[in-house]
Image: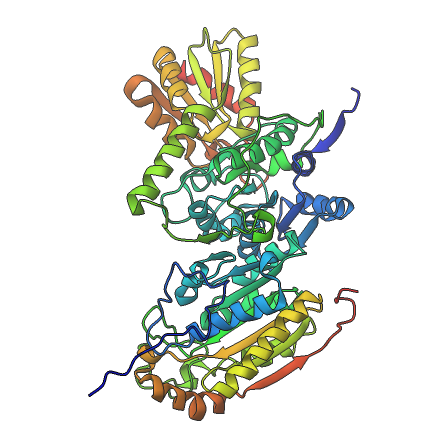
Length: 261
Length: 357
């Protein structure tokens, strides 16, 4: 048997805005790594890394703070969009994004989210929808599907007790101050291409000073869904998208009385 | 008289902040601090600043946090129920060591309480209302001039130590008008805000990551030893109080803020009658002037605490004086009227003084 010689060749460098000193600490099969890379690529392609200030939330996005070679803050659960508002108001020339989880958009942070859209804050929100509270161990979230079992809905989510799933992207689209709202997924290569385009558009709306922009990402949480990574992809395709349709819900280039220029 | 103006205590906050270079205010209406927010909404747009009315005090607290995190001089003002709502943000400010300034124009009582006079938030302001064993500097002005001056001083202290500074006034101080000299104060040089999130392009491409957890070098002992060292340094350097006629005093009044004004009058009335009374007025409620209370208490032996509260300041006075002095309390039950307009008048304080001598 002859040994086959292995040659190593770099085919793709990590994004330069991805801090290499810290490995991604998410669970195997989590989609956050894909989304983090996507954010880095979009920021670099738009040439805004020098003036971007990013926020993680509480829970798993709290660690996002350490992944980016950008000015970053994270670790507080809920008021991310109030903090982002102030940073943007203090530095109007900066580009501000906030990564927010299910509770931060639909529960503890719902008020901050609605108020930021009401004011048409020129910030970009990255909403990670994984249908549960991940960091705390898989409790029900506002986004949990009906009938879905979690550690606090062990018989499945019953709308008589806990109401209905939270549709952040549609809600944002209904607000006058929103320039762009989309829901995307990264569970297939084709969807990743669409999601990156949507994320880029969301940042472009902020750069142009149009209004509030948001991309909701459906994202797998294998540990708390009790599914393998591949089964998670099927769950997104067959269950999540049925409740949370993908697509753009709002895309405007000018909002009267609000947009720059 | 030249340049002097007659303004109320709430407007003095605004004027002091503008003199200190504060250009951003985040807040939510609440009585009795509304004149502060109205002042900023009127004045900040003229200088290219931002007045932003938030969706509540929790948001105002976090907006103040965000603006300060981004390196700007900004502030908020509120009153007791709103200050309670800001405790979460305050705790995050403490762990990230952002130099924020908050004015709490106290009103009376727990819950909605009343919208009027009271000093029932001493413990909340000085012991921290949020979680995590942090400290905030608490300044207690007792005149409109001091409100104007202390607002400027607050920004200096906040940035010198990277700590939250609370200016604790109340209904009376906020709504009473006095002649003041609106002069800018000069302070020492302050350190560069190299920690602030401004976008790495403004810092030679060097990015900064700030976490709202105990991420200091050295782990948990590293974080807390840094905090302990900082709080000790502040206590040694910044403790401030004022004394009046204590040299020959046979009884020492201890009071802060509006109660110190009544107490000052009581001292004057007592002295006219030849009664030897002095006053110690803590100006920093934290750090508390423990040493001064202890020394004067030991020498005079007889202390009367006057506060418009069931008794909060008295706990710090007792802890400082120890066994060296008898500590009595004239509290909210000594008000002249059972309604929300009730006050502890100087005459009532004088009566108490006579009964103790």
